[in-house]
Length: 150
Image 1: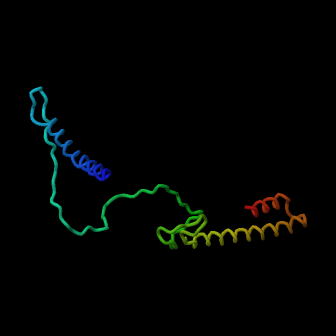
Image 2: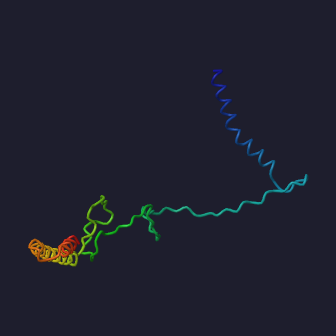
């Protein structure tokens, strides 16, 4: 029975503690006292009426995004872009196809270079045959060989 009484006394002490603290705070505050103390001005607060409503899980905002990293993509050859065969936001590995270029002009330049090579080869072979017969100067053969290397 002694233990029960101690528990009741503890509960009474715990229950009266907030009241004692409130009384102490009230005694310390108040209007301007006789000792020259000043009362604290009341704190301005904003209030709102509590209401029940549905809250959306989406939020719309306008802003600007900036990438953490940026890279410069350049083509090794010139040409108009025919297509961009990738999905926006997809990961692209190094050396992967990101643009298909129009190579019509490049193919024409290759054909011109091949024709010039064939022409220089034929000229070299003609001059070599003439030099072998000692009918042309060796300098002509050197010039034809240099043109063939270009």
